[in-house]
Length: 203
Image 1: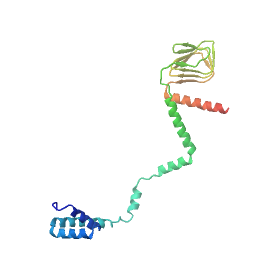
Image 2: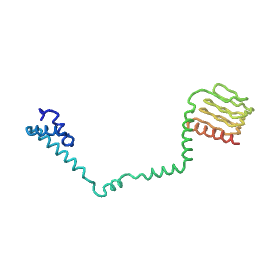
Image 3: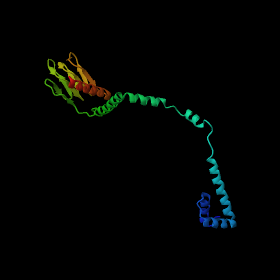
Image 4: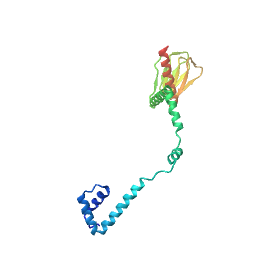
């Protein structure tokens, strides 16, 4: 058959598909009368087509689909979570807001080594050490970053030390004292400050 012209193979496919012209059909039949190789190839093609056609009539056993669906993993938990999320959109929105706000605040965590301190009267700065001298009163909040704070006098406000240390003996601080040396401490400090700022707006 390999020595036969290629178009006879095309004629065979056209014949089996029912698309062959009368002229080509007669030419193919005439050729196959004298070509055993093409006859064998035509029989093989016919058997293949017959098998494919018979396979299309194969049906699944009764209850096959139901059994397969029953064995699939259940999605009840996922559906339950989706229903809960739909019923509580405010909680979801708040969670997303705090997640984004937390990521933003974490990104603003001071990783630099730059020393800074709030500017108030009666504060003495010696290198990276801030001192509230004995007998002096500092009005307002004191924030020291990347330095140490020593209070020997009084602070009428809050005290915050970021990436540093706080030392006091007989110190008097009217507000809260916070030492922030970890990123999560910074996050909590910033969130509380923002909450207090919001509350102050409504007062």
